Image (cartoon, rainbow, N blue to C red; front, side):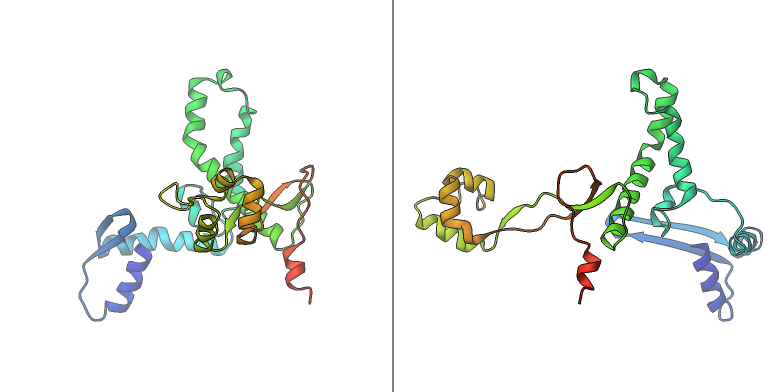
Length: 226
C-alpha cells in the first residue's frame, strides 16, 4: 500500500499540497475496512531508507528470503526453496508419536501446522498440474479419481420413475443415484434409468506407481495429437 501511495503522490503532488496519506483496504467478503495513515515525511523516509535499499538487493539477486502468511500470494510458493526449508524443519522430530514429544515441541508444531499443510497442498497442486501438462514424476503416475454417477436430466428421471410406479421425491428433492438405486433395485434402476445416468471421468490424481488404477493418457499428448 505504501508503494501505491508513492505512485499516487507522484501523480498528484504537482496539483495538491499533500502532507498526510491515508491508505484503505476494503474487503467486502470479510466485512472489513482498514485504514493506515502516515505523514508525507514518514512515507518518503520509508522509501529512502527501506524501499530503495531492499529493491536494489532484490534486483541484484541478493538479500534474504522470509516466509510467512504472505507466501499464499507468491507465484513461487510451490517450489520456493526457503519455504521448503522452513517447513521441512519439522522433520527433525522424525514424525515421532505425539506421546514422545514434549509439550514445548507440540506447541511449536501446532504453530506451524497451518503453514505446513498449506505448503504440502501447494506442492501437491503444483506436481499434479505439471503432470497434467506432461511432466513425469519418477515413481508416480496420473490416474482418474473415483467417477461419480449423475443424472443427465432430472425431469426425465422423475417421469420415468413415476411411470414405473415409484415416487422419486421421497426427499424434498429428487433422490440421488445411490438412494434411487436402493429404491428401485439395481436391475430396475438400470432398466428404467440406465440411459439417463452418466459416469463422468474422475479428476486427475497423482498417485504412487504401485496404485492399482490404470495410468491416464497424457492430456497434453492427446490435445496436440493432431
